[in-house]
Amino acid sequence: MKYHIIIFFLFLSILMSRGMVLSQTIRPIRDNVGYCWQQNQVDKFIEWLDENCPEDNLESKDLVAGISPHDDYLYAGRIYYQLYKLIHTKEVVIFGVTHSTVRKAMNDPKNVLIFDKFDKWQGPYSKVGISPLREIIKQRSDPQYYMVSNKAQSIEHSIEGLLPILQHYNRNVKITPIMVTEMPFERMDSLSTMLADIISSYINENNLKPGKDIFFLISNDANHYGEDFNNQPYGHDENAHTLATENDIRIANESFNGLVTRDKIKEFSNELWPEAGVNRNCPLWCGRYPIVLGLLTINKIVSQLGKKLSGKVFKYSDTWTDGVLPVKGTGMGITAPYSLKHWVGFLSAGFYIK
Image 1 (tube, rainbow, N blue to C red):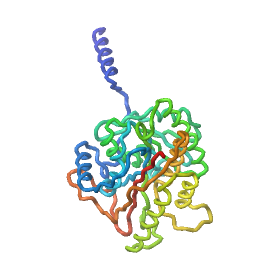
Image 2: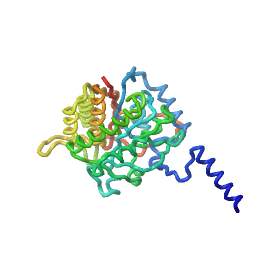
Image 3: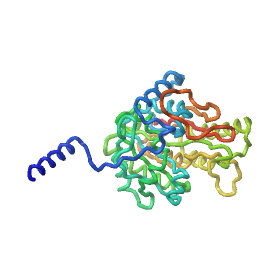
Image 4: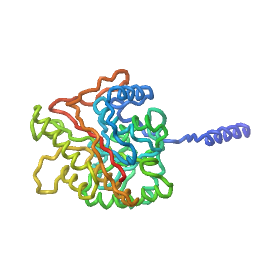
């Protein structure tokens, strides 16, 4: 009996010495249709993008943050590609959406961030590690500002959709996943101050350089247009599509190009959910809360470095304009159809320290 006990503890010590934890919890894959989770599939997809997307000569120097789509890769692949090939950091903070599926399942939480407590997330090349920053934020935050739910993170796709392409370019990347719920601008302004102070301290304590060691991603899809979204202010013909996409592009250019300021972020928030009494057709961007909270937080972090944050819209498109990319052999599909009665816009943008 003693011999078996000795063997057991010897085996356990070997596992621990190799970093193997027997009780690790892995965040499961939510969407295995719109994204690809096998290494060879991601490689083949990126190879197709390399061959079929023109070089835009976008600058990577001093790039510290970006807005990314989370729609199906066969719809938005070109938009992801413009941004992700510029990201090469060992950790990434991701501000994600709290979609309606999560809100229904979780009794519609508001005014909080949602964290998980998974040890790792699934990735196509290896399991994706979690940055120590996640637990530091929990420890140093006022409890009224957040909740912890593996269930909520498991049924939300806006963060996981960024991981396969992100990990392609950053094989050992660690993430800090943060879901953002609905909340008024003033609360996001207050919360972002707390969050920026915590992240800035973490950056300083670990001698990190934004853009080189740590990056910030904001997950967003732009207008969700049509009957299925109860959002068709212009009708359902080609002219309606033109008007709606032109409005999306206007908002993106006015909000994300040039110097980032609190007033500009506030104006963006008014575009997406106007204050009471303001009558305008609001496009339905699912990332409206992550964008506002994310940009407020990132701008304050950069300000604490004595710098300024400046943005640039990289590329915009939508499911109706581009349709399905003709990529074969990746195992991917699409999770929703597209038509003039049902389409989704998406964009990528980059933000630089100046």
